[in-house]
Length: 106
Image (cartoon, rainbow, N blue to C red; front, side, top):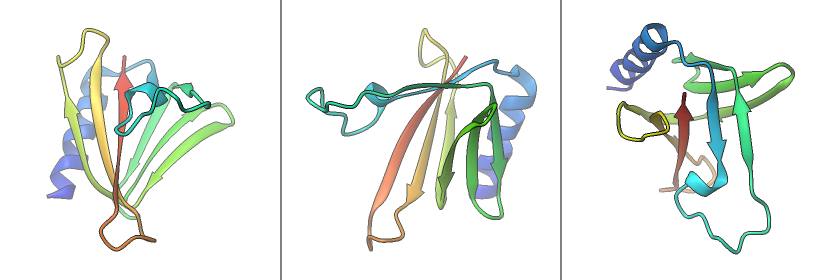
């Protein structure tokens, strides 16, 4: 199943060629408005790897790596801002701990 999800993401990237990928703390599950650290990160490139299961956002020397990817979903036309990419990663330090991240593709 994960292979088909990675393939769908790669097909989306090849077809639409997003120019920007945005990772905002405000768009993440469990975001707390009282959190004193707000992230607004922008990247030009998204790389995917099935082995190891990883998605990487890059821009120059800056990068964010999502490892232990369990699932990835591209939801087109779900936002007026762009396509939503949901990434679920397994937290290896917690027995049942999955962590979900939302990236916006423009």
